[in-house]
Image (cartoon, rainbow over all chains, first blue to last red; front, top):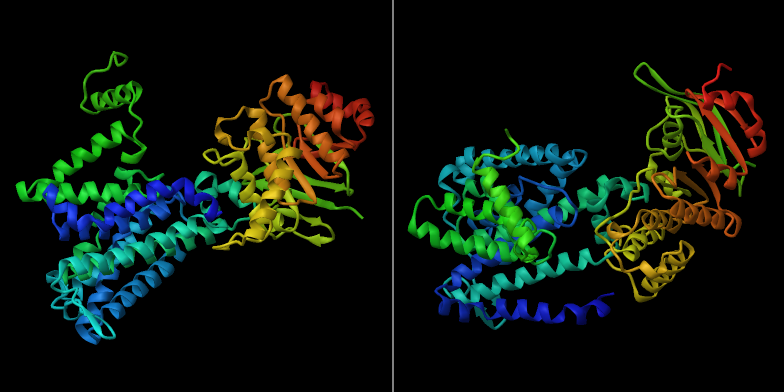
Length: 338
Length: 249
């Protein structure tokens, strides 16, 4: 299957990876900087992990920031209290997020739709309050500090990922590659196809002999695993973890990234994250109200491109329906409402 | 021995008695139609057989084993495949992918993160076989959601066939179809029954279809078993005529 599919996708994949591999070199030319590219990778991986569940299993979690944040706290706690090893920190962050996701996922996979989303928010907030209240261990509202990512030693060589932004970018890119490759691999497998089946029609999937709740749980756990990898990266980026990384606000932002980029597309959430993180970076340097502007961008994109940036089909029909919805949203009187 | 034995099943929803003490025996290779006026409890009866919900009382025996407590997906695993009155498909996937998912689940690959070339080509062979059996091979690469109703139903029956069922449960296979589509689906069901020797239980409203296809007919009325027999016996049965035409029995 993979051998057959590779040639068809090859140009697109080559382009994506060329852009990512060369990002530190072309970003400065368009006014960006390497750390911004690193942030795009981190949130891109987070949004793609969320989208494994949202776009490819058809289940919306509004509490995924909890597992993102647990990844960061897991990494930070190891570096602060246990041992100065970056790889151990990443492993601990992923383990913490994945185990928490697996346990809580088991409690909520019987819920559907908005009830599922509400349960994910509620359980997500539990971790927010733990991080917020347990000051002696997590640093509470001030966040977890101080900790520092450690240089990576490869026998004779030591790679300084702490001060060398370029080296750190490629370190994050390597984990991004592992995460996205693993998710793509799963989605091309028979297991991945059962998830698509659940997204398309859960009842039909159940009557094909798929225990859908177990598969949704597995998908939830996989999704938590990779979003906690992104979270661990985020902890390393800032050498810092704070409770707001875990709360529903952050969850909402990750959902926005996935929807903005296009949740039916594997790479869409990466595009969404790139747009979101870049706009956030620019707008927050201009105004404290950056969230209002980002929110407007999101509303407009949902009205005009409901399938996200990668799902854009420019046509008069989509423009017209976008305008019509915008007009009704702004409360202009309708002809039929006499 | 009977392949399917339904013994005195009942289903109540609160105070509503939807099905009351209905029994049914289906022999291997038989095509059984279940008919009845609207509200007779046909779909409820069917849902209990397929495991969509458990009966309030009674037992269901499939191939000698009591399957009453088994959930739907376990019944599918032991050979009870079903289709729905409202076509249940994966609309945004192609016909090929729809049936491949079913074939992979049937082969026990549902948790596999990887399948080898050999296994993948066996699956593909199986899917191609089903596509031609169901008469939709030329539409393999179309999205199912874009097909005509009759072809969607054929794809759905194809998905059920991919599960290698020993019993095929069809819930109103020609519901909402025009004459031409009804004719094609009727032909497909007859091929499955006569040529491929499937055991089939179907619910159907269209009497032409029922009398054309069925070996035996079970008639339900107001949740109870009204009559059972060959098509000619049922056609001559006065109680059945009364139930359908509303005469006092």
